[in-house]
Amino acid sequence: MKKIVTIAAAAAAFASSFAAPAAFAQEAQSPWLVRVRAVNISPDNKSDPVGGVGASDRLTVSSKTIPEVDISYFFSPNWAAELILTYPQKHDVRLDGQKIGTFKHLPPTLLMQYHFTPESRFSPYLGAGINYTRISDVHVLNDGASLDSHSIGGALQAGFDIKIDRHWLINFDIKKVQIQSDVKVGGTKISTVKIDPWLFGVGVGYRF
Image 1 (cartoon, rainbow, N blue to C red):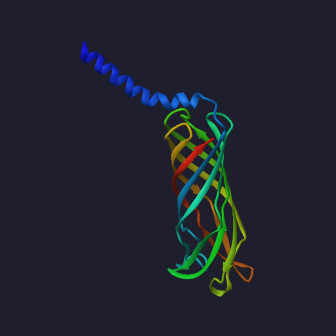
Image 2 (cartoon, rainbow, N blue to C red):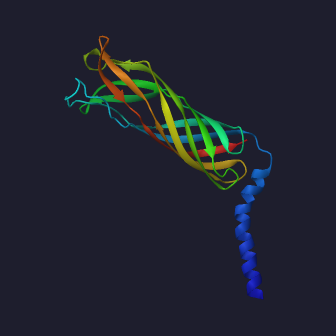
Image 3 (tube, helix red, strand yellow):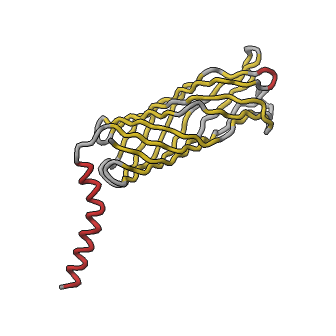
């Protein structure tokens, strides 16, 4: 009998560790959630050959790790919109491995997300939306080449939150974003830089 009581007590304690998040999730919460992430930008670098079909020289864009702030608004327990923000990021541009210039881009992205188990400690989600990238400070590329000033493309997202308590959480996130720009010399297009980066992020969040 004593062994049965001990097992029952242990089972109750184990169950309560998962029931606790549901308990505080049921309380009224603000619809606002802010996350701060460290994000590694890893460009796909599938640019068109410089010089047209058959040429071997390709432009590549450097990868880097950046800070990111994300603001989410929950329309319901499952549905949320997330706005992704950072400051202008500087990238090197290389041709056949040789640095030929730099540029900056500011890529705010708006996503609609579906959270599968919002009241659980482990809460995965998927998202889709649109990215607008402002390209600026293009510094001398070979032969006076320049880039378009902006890019508009789609964005896909997958991630999950691990709740620490009613307010705080740990976040893991991956995004695929379409970013590209025509490369022009004297107004004539000579290539297209297809950055199309993967963004791998980890951070913390606070639900108000």
